[in-house]
Length: 159
Image (cartoon, rainbow, N blue to C red):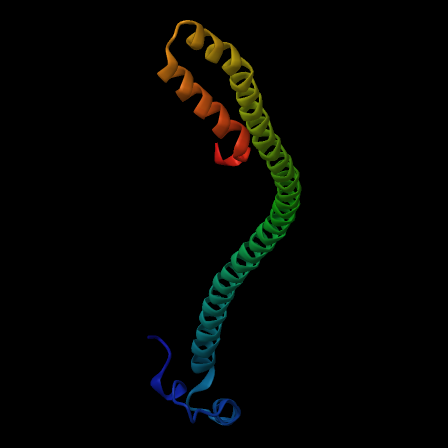
């Protein structure tokens, strides 16, 4: 507000104004003192502005440094996670193979159990048939005989 309006125009020429002030006897030393005071105030305002911008710029650089550090840390974490994922995949693959193997063994054991049960059933049928014939239960004997015939003739998977 203290700066004269003529100095604020876009077309203001500093050199011409300085020559005019130095050659003019009217304005004299008082005018020169006023200009020096204005110059000091401008320098003060400019230094405050520069400090403000410098602090803002400094904070921006610090923030950027922190961001770079976080990016680096996150890269390390991502690499560790990749290694963990690879190790987990390997373990899962091994576990999958083991699970498949165990499943196949379980299937084989079930078939073996079915065979053993069938063998036991066939093994006791002659005794059961003899006992039913001795007890003169011919209808039961015929049923057991038919069952024995089915067990012997048909494949095990059909039984």
